[in-house]
Length: 168
Length: 144
Image 1 (cartoon, each protein chain N blue to C red):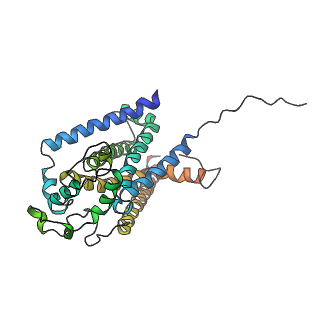
Image 2: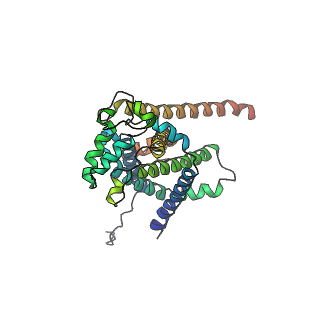
Image 3: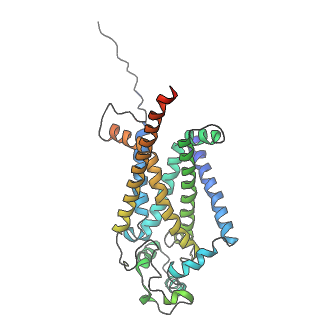
């Protein structure tokens, strides 16, 4: 007796964890490189940071459910770790916005493309850019540390190929 | 349409923060940064004016010009800048860069510092987790 196999094409489902893993790894590398404007040169620093901002937007969009869920519950009962994580992420969001805004305002390569030339490459925005970037690396370190379990488990599962590893 | 309006919402919130930052700047909240940036911030104003007046409007030109800009020292100045920058020898350095390392290229010392910071935060969180777990285990028999 033979069983008929379905002939309908099987729709491949996108693994959101893999998407997250790839996006987060790229974002992390881009962020570390963005902290080295001397190494990359100013045009790569600025245009790479624009790409980084888009990657961060994608990262936030992928975590929409978590963000909206916790925002609704923020004033209610929540585990301390989740609340701390949320506040840390909020601080990261504000800090990255400040890095981007101050970076654009002292831009030498990005704005001229749009016909805007800024003279104020120095001044308070430059200083704010440096200070917020220094703060950003500290928050990034804490952000990674907060998600270490997810990083380890997804790395084991999808990079090392350990089938038994559960992504938390 | 979720894929469109969700990022737009985040972008909108970022724009609100931007408006707040610009508003704070207009209100003079970052005045103290202006004072400190004169001593260790970017290149002096006169040098910048000279750079801009050369007409480096295309991105590639700007790039060539600007990739060298952070490593520029006061020796490239045509005229002394007014105020505190006139005496500064590292006025064009990024603040986080150690003084004296004005050449281009990756700042490995900074990279090492970043890596150590991430590693330190990771280990601290692991230690904190273990501490909390041990506390929970030790308090369990007392509850039971």
